[in-house]
Image 1 (spheres, helix red, strand yellow):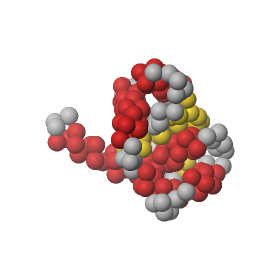
Image 2 (cartoon, rainbow, N blue to C red; image 1 turned 30 degrees about the vertical axis):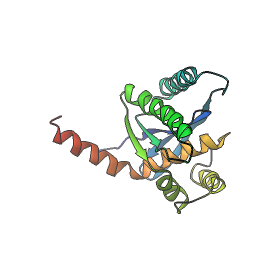
Image 3 (tube, rainbow, N blue to C red; image 1 turned 90 degrees about the vertical axis):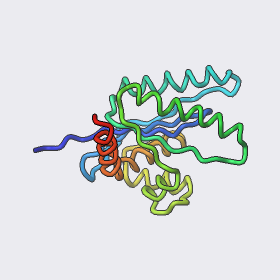
Length: 175
């Protein structure tokens, strides 16, 4: 019985820039597929910015046909209004892959950093460096795209436990 590589979409939600990164996970082997960012202008109304994020992620999914998705959890910062706006962008980042029929896993920022860098409080430069080591063909043009690749890598490493958890939940509800 041969296993098939799993294509994973990592999403780093943001209102200014939502990073996305696609990898294929084939056992312990990780392969870079693509990465980028969906950018919005601060001059646009919030509703239009959310539509741009929606449409951008929808296009990524249509073009690259991932099988699973992972999104970074939002951390709560001092500015409640900024946290709320980021939460709305994160809602779009979860909605788009879910509407496309993908399972969507969620990971805390510290878990992503610990998985990729080895420490839960790694710096952005360390994440970029490890992306270069783990995915030598990747050349993310923004920190958001690099973070999205890190989220996809985190999911590739933890997806077995996530998939099992979903199966248990589905069994519990009779599906």
